[in-house]
Length: 454
Image (cartoon, rainbow, N blue to C red; front, side, top):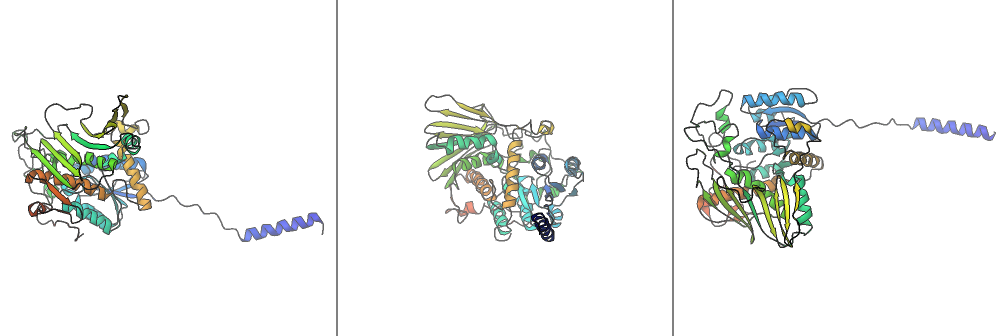
């Protein structure tokens, strides 16, 4: 056998052996788009949903709202944004939507008094969630939501999106995590925007609800009030029956941001005072003036809101002012400013808008463009945690702590005394009257959830 024949026959044998052992390469199919449902198709429901659609190839398959006009409007827009071009299924009862048990993600953007029941039902259905803040309209609701998320192993991101705001992440790393601010002494948090309806009985009389709104179902478990134009859409925040006032709406963001930046847990006690001190003619019953002090074992975080008069700092109308030994950090959704105590120049950064990357933000109706990047960041974090099953940055437990702390502030104002909180027993220490207010009565036939019955 010549060398050439040997090499030829050897190569042929190798080729035959290789062919016999060949397994065709298989390429993983593209993952199916996550199926998404939205409960509450109004202002922030659409804002949240459309940001999710910007960052992931999801398919919105279900929408639910008790307002048929809002529902149809959202469905029209979603059909254009869905890559499949399909119009989502429409529901006026969230229970029917969740009974399909075919949703990967459920977003909840209802009025505050409707957060708990659909959230708990969505956990039971096997979906992961994005739920707007606050977590509940009372503390036991909020506690039950946390219990449901843990019992059913669901990933739940709460819409306290300051934790995903690009310039605030930078501020935390640059001045707090680095130690540049020095020892932190105290924090002031505030909102000096109006945030309160000025309508009176004369300008907003009681009327029959519009035909497109199922008002009975809209009120749901909350106390029934006669319908007036303030209530819906969006004006419900003017009433404590459906929310938790400016503390529950705006303080929860700044308190949560402060807790995140400084690594704070539960406050040891909460004290609050204020009331309707200026605009007594308005139908709104939420406070127009309120101060609350959250005591974290001797470290004070103090909230102020006022819907009248001049702003103390027009550049920071809704903000956290963090006082350190080496400087002061003023942080808001719009900017941050670090003022060194050594007389050095103020270090300033504006919010990131991302309009170059997402030009559609510029024309979307009612979108808070300055908040859109934070919502996108929140959605990206949610999606990542759905894959890893890790807790998201605004996990339901963090949302519960911030929300419940704000509800305690309102209870302190109502009772006129400081409330000491036991986070293990989930009770106000030595105060049966306060503990009786941790769960407010539900309107029949709705049943109030508890951590034990979810």
